[in-house]
Image 1 (cartoon, rainbow, N blue to C red):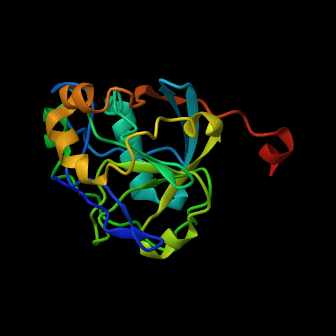
Image 2: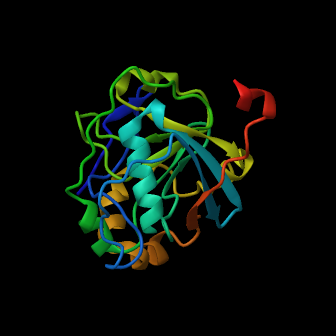
Length: 221
């Protein structure tokens, strides 16, 4: 289900998200029942370059925050590649290395969150979209810089990197803009990556981690 983000970046660079909704692992990791996420939660992405921790704020985009929570808890991101990395723009992930898992999520399009959205500032985590209404799936990206031009185009951040931004900026970018290859990755899975993108960085595991306690002064308010 090829989810191509039809957004053009600065007059020519296509921003892609494949229609094939993505999920990692085996058939046992089928799409879970909907679950509401906590108001604030953190996810540690253990990657081949190091750890990246994102803090998700449900109030920013409740539907997106819930979907990310479901994906993490189901083990979807295990082995997922950072398949599209564009320096000074963003890094994108959310395609499973298991084609059968991608098919499981293919029809589970996510309705748009209510506006207004947070801004796509440096370090924010945002679901990709085709540019059409209600077209989000399982792909997300981390903004490498302030990409505020995306704010009016349906891209709703769900959280932000709080640890490891310097790690995220090291993901391998030597394959260029791979927007046109998303369908091949979704259908070919790990075998395709091994043949054609052997240097791609990936998520080893994604886990919910406790958020640090609030300062005492803030907790009393």
